[in-house]
Image (cartoon, rainbow, N blue to C red; front, side, top):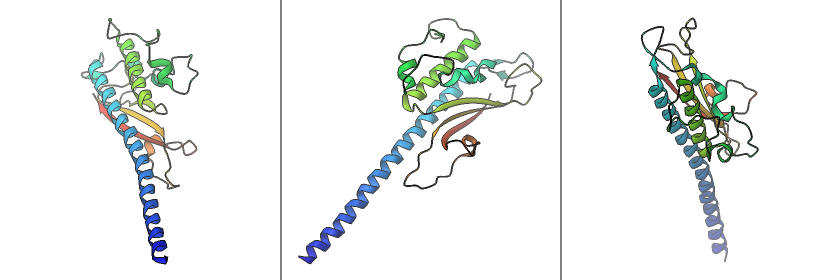
Length: 194
């Protein structure tokens, strides 16, 4: 009888270990999915930047329209009327009137920027509603009219709230955690030079 109880005790410890492994594995899979989707979307935005690039009026090289760097275009900041927690359901199931339809019409460079920012925001909201997209530029010539001059580095960041697993502190990327008082963020970054 004692041998059976000892065997059951050892078996139950093993089963608890397997259950814990499954639990941690599900968190790892969710994190990997968020990261994979963010990588795909950053690459899509980089390709859209390359496709929208035009010759600079001031020097030899390619630049994108200054509207791409308008932070209000991303994450639906330029749209209103959403009261739900999931912005995808509010803004992406039907194209809002404020967003130009560049697939079915002729658009200016600024309208392409607005449409691209909307499309990328919808793609991110569909997979991770808590994520935010940003596009910044380390402009190497602030004297010209281009927000991101020829040869400047464009940085695409997709960030979302970091999750702790079993109270284990994780190493966080300083690019998406510049403010030590803000909520910790996981992120994917991509630097592009046109």
